[in-house]
Every structure is written in structure tokens, then in C-alpha cells.
Amino acid sequence: MLGKIVEFAKKEKRLRAVILNGSRVNPNAPQDIFQDYDVVFVTEDVPYYMENREWIPTFGEIMILQTPDAMSSPEQGEMSGKFTYLMQFMDGERIDLTFYQAEKVQGMVHDSLSKVLLDKDGILPDLPEPGDQDYITKRPSEKEFMDCCNEFWWVSTYIAKGLWRRELPYAKAMFDGPVRDMLVLMLKWQIGMRHSFSVDSGKNGKYFQSYLDPEMYGQLLQTYSDGEYENIWEALFVMGGLFRRAAHELAEELGFRYPEEDDLNVTAYLNHVRKLPSDANRMY
Image 1 (cartoon, rainbow, N blue to C red):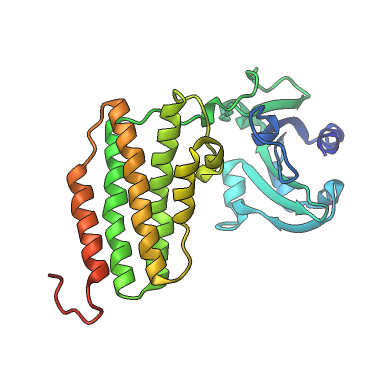
Image 2 (image 1 turned 90 degrees about the vertical axis):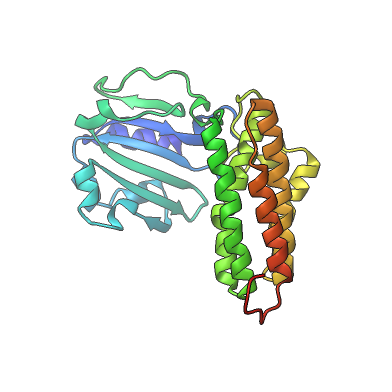
């Protein structure tokens, strides 16, 4: 596939350079059959590739295609100087291909997972050896830590409200949206701290199994509940315990203050709402 990409760019006069991004140039990323090709084609004519799609079969038979830059506004791609094709092929290969306007390339932000495959005119800057340094979890400030704790415990009360009202879609949205996001962030910080903030535990914690101890990973799995109300309640308290454990360790190591009072107050509230009769007409 890389050969096809480079040969296509060599033959196309409108294409001046090719950059490969993402996991394909990450020496630390696991290699498997689902890795896609994140490619940037530098061109003098983005509008041409927005309108002309005859080149797509060069890379295979399309299963499904998406053009995110055209989904909100047809003019968006032309105004931004770039246009992206997300292409899943019938043979299992996937290419995320962005056409980028040549005159804007000097201002283009290159992350650490970038490798030049072709540069016909020498217009690209010298890039360092690819690595995942831009994706390594950074040490949080105490404010970031406190904001994470506040969001976790604050939105946990929304879950309790949704469960008591028997509003399952709402409760699950809060559970697997903002509250889980904060748990994942706290676990990423904890893993980062344990490894001197030198590792990337993956988007949405996809590498957590490799970094968390088996007990904590087992607890994390228990937070993925089904649609039964009592099971969601159980998962919510497991989630609170896991968050508390990770946050305590992080706070102790980094010299932060953990908001114990928020934790105690909200946990007591969650226990109270869980036991509240379904026909209650007052909170206490």
C-alpha cells in the first residue's frame, strides 16, 4: 500500500509531497491488521481533488467512504486549504488521506508521528525521527487535577438522578460520557506518574491493560455495565472506588490536595438516592 501511495504521488503532477502520519511511523505502537494509513498529499490544487474522485480505485475497491470536511459545509474544505477522504476498502485496508494546499505547508503543524515519504520540490521542513513524544501523558497541574475530581463527582449526581427517574438513556449517557472521561483521564495520569510521565497509555485508555495492575484493570472492567438499573448502581460505586484510589495515589505523589469532602458528600448522596423510594415526594 505504501508503494501504491508513493507511486501515485510521483505520477500526479498536482501532487508535490507526501507525509505519513500516525501509528504506521510509531515505533512503540502495536502492529496489527487494523492499522490504517494516515497520509497527507501536499498539492497545488485542493479543489481538483475535492471534485475529482476517479483516482480512488488506484488504492482498491471502496467499501465505504467519508469526507468529513464536506459534511458540515461544502465550502469548508476549500476555505481551510485541505480536504480529507476517509476510505475503507473491501480488502480490509484503510487510508485516511488529506489533500493539503502547498502554499500553506510551511505553517502546517507536524506532530511527532510524521515521516516524509516524498518531496519533489524540497518544500517540507526537516522533521525529526518519528516518535510518540507528542502523545505521552503530561504531568497535570493541581488545578487540572482538581477540575477532574470536581467534574467526576459533580456529574455522578446526574447519574443518580437518571437512575432514580428510570431514565436509562440519560443515566448511561452521563455514565459513559463525562464521568467515564474523567476516570480515564485520572487513570492516564496515574499510569503516567508511575512511569515518570514517559509513556502513552493510548486514546481512550486502549492500552490500559498493559499498564494497570490486574486488580485495577479488573475493577475497570466492572464499570462497564449492562442496562439493568441495579447493575449500573453497582458499576457506579466501583467507578467511584477506582477513581478515588487512583486520585489518592496521584495526589500523594504529586503533593496535591484531594477533595475528600466532595467525595464523602457525593458518595453519601449516591447511597441515599439509591435507597430512595420510587414514589418519594421529598429528598430527605
